[in-house]
Length: 404
Image 1 (cartoon, helix red, strand yellow):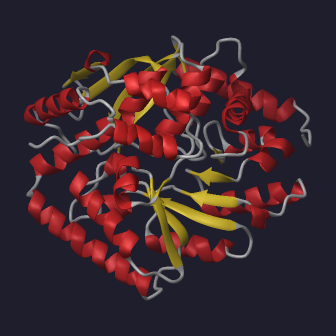
Image 2 (image 1 turned 180 degrees about the vertical axis):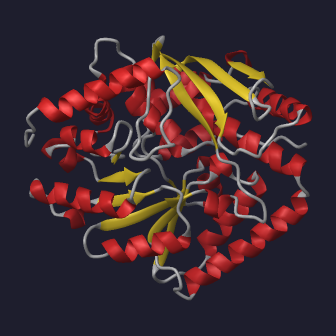
């Protein structure tokens, strides 16, 4: 199989935005990550696992070239000191443990500095996806069905069957292949749309290639590690520590806050006037999107902030039909945007993989994500999860809220 990841730019934009803040503020933090396949009927053969190992070895031999570094330096929120660090950086294969002892036939764990391990997540998942679909099925037929469905989607955008407003492609981690994602981004960027606007992709390599915007701010790992990686922190204040560190790094730049790392209700205790003003918007990634959006609009109104000056970014398991309904519901109430992944990058005749790599420990301490819906949380230690929930419950039931 040809090399899948051919450039270190081929990762999601938020890996660079988080990476820069990690480099400047948390360079000594260490993390552990674990792979999980949520599909019940998927099995990775020994041959697939060996190819995944080979592809990861090739990925770990990559370095940034000067043209790529110049591109990163041209992004307004990236600083020269971080670009200089990336000039020296390369992945380490020794950070990986790859085996076959999981129920799905594939286990992957990585450990090391957060600066390193954070960068491995997206390329590793892209490799796993492409190896699986190329080896489990007739890839040419899959690509044919992918292109056919993509063309139908674009036609629906053109004739206004779908109305999305601004939307981006977020599918790198679960794409069918690099070829398929490239086709999707190229065709969406070229399409002449009226009530929808394709504004960018999370894939920095493809953003550079097609001259569009690389899109992405922060992931759950940021809130989990910043908020829970310091043993002196009360984890119920994870969002405050994470938001504070982000503002120190970026000020008003690159500001879309993720709300559901330890539930949106707890997030809103810290997302008061200062942060609600500084951040340009918020991202939805779990739970009922309508209830979440209404809650955020009411939150802004309570702080005397016009919701029409803020963006509600929806990114949870979307297709164009669901996005259209959400857009029409919130149109005129707030700015609305979408990040759409698997539906754009891996919609074929076969079921897409539901695979993740999540942070499970930081600085030798368990970390946890508690989303707004069951099934999207992750923690390896039930005792720590119980402790975190008790901290949150105490805060929610006993702390008085403040406007600031």
